[in-house]
Image 1 (spheres, one colour):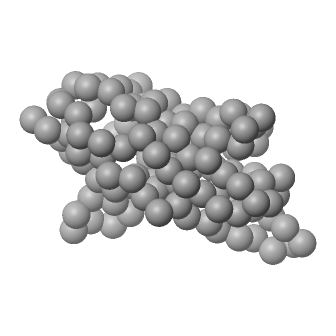
Image 2: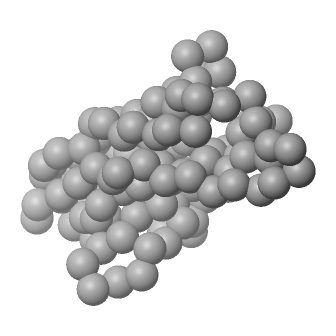
Length: 118
């Protein structure tokens, strides 16, 4: 599975951005997709996940502001980010977990920078 993110950039406090993650390869084996982020000097943290069932999960810090979704037809996942804050500044990574031939695999995209200016 290969993952390619896009949509990052510079936005002002209170602004919005939409990130995209396009998956290719053995996409039928994916059972969980997610977004993570890593700010300078901090550990990578979960932002949101979405299961094949459509069930979503969000970090408390982004609930009510961010929305994760996916388009199965084109194997693309999105993260709509509204009411952005300077503390949302980080590199955002797309993640996919798959089960293929009884092997659990974990895949990462290259990351996309999101910078929120105050």
